[in-house]
Length: 312
Image 1 (cartoon, rainbow, N blue to C red):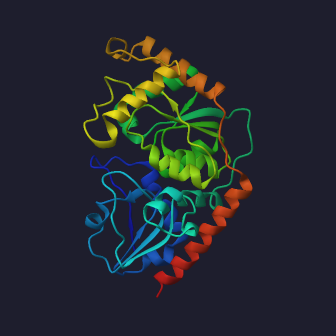
Image 2: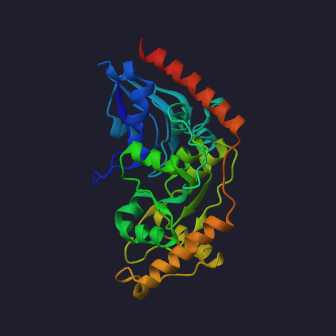
Image 3: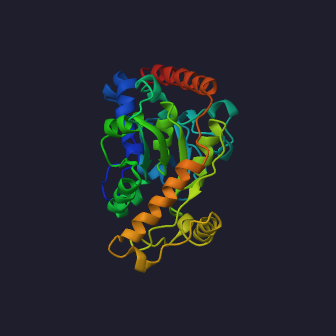
């Protein structure tokens, strides 16, 4: 069985995507070892119009906890695609799937593989950006975190390094969704935030609905010189204007190009102040542990079914 997950054009590793290999090799080692014409579509926002082309024509496709989004909508499910569960109720509604298939993101399963760390006085607040923003503004965000005494977690780090960093945090400010998913799985409170229209709210809303939590991110001003302009679709136009409107409404202001040039101390200090305000004033999220255990068991049941089907 092949594991399919999104790979960026620039080949930069991304935690949420690379988590597929780390997770499924532990849960489905025998199925992955089989040399057959089947594909597992797992973690990621992959159910869109490009998926058929990206997959080719394998004999069997197993879809497990995947989400809809990005590109154009996927209009139909092929007959040889077997859906065991999807990320949340929004994905299920899009495909008119039964409600019991809307479980949650499979990343939650790592709570069976990694033990939560006991609270420690040395644990710090941590911040993990979206991989796109880490790529273009890594040095800025590192400096911001250093200024305010927060831990910077890079989504391009190896999977186990990211998990360990989140595991040893007392609060995670997350722009990367699988950072938040990992935090929730390990019992680390988290706060969603966004620094540009590139962050897809639909996927967050889908997953948050599955854990019965609202998605109300804190909005930070985009790093205008570092971040590229967004030229199409969900990353421009009304969505961009809406992001900036929310940023101003929250009193976070804007950062001019003059302030940003050379990663000035003014820029760093201002972002650090905003980030610290979010960490201290915003109410963090942590899903109900009983509900999360119910979701975990539901995923395990579907995974057992997939494992059996893959062996046939």
